[in-house]
Image (cartoon, rainbow, N blue to C red):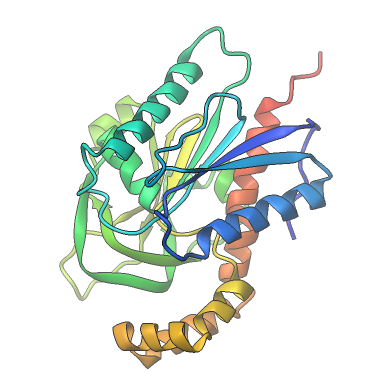
Length: 284
């Protein structure tokens, strides 16, 4: 299912930053599964550790090659100035400083998911992080922008592609001047909704050469998510909040191999492969 990795490098170290604050979730399981499957398919040693950011205020050091920062519950605005967020942003600045250093032999690669993506957008001031008028929940098309067609993380994806979306907040009103100045690229936006007068949210951004993030959940595992949503308690919760048709639509999309299964098999594996390729020393 996963594309083969170019080059070879043993003992790749990965840090997973867990922002779920102890809330039951599928995200962490899915990230672990992708790492397991990628390592097995490519015959590469991936070692990883997990850091609980919001409760224990744990963040990794620079002893890792790849960092994956998870989604999580709650407001990405109300945590401003909190102790855990200060610790988190100090970690991010440490990684930035390392990557800018001329003495750094190996750069560090970061992927931000959903809640982490919103925090990163606030950090870089690339747009306005705001509460949505209503919750976005379900499987939705994601539309690529021009800059995404050469984006390694989006390799092999169709335009539009489909992704799991679950959020009460969004990033809108991009600061195009700042984005150009920092060398960032908006990669994708949400589906067009001509019947409503709302700005389309930015769904993915490459912040710099080493850091990229998505508003959607590329780690969402179609089979696991489908089983999760068919649990009686979860089914009832979704139907109570979003209606039976939304629940039925999600199950249908999750079972479509051209939708979530394809996104799952490409985005994070592409990020891992691209990161490892840049870690492999060039042959002389």
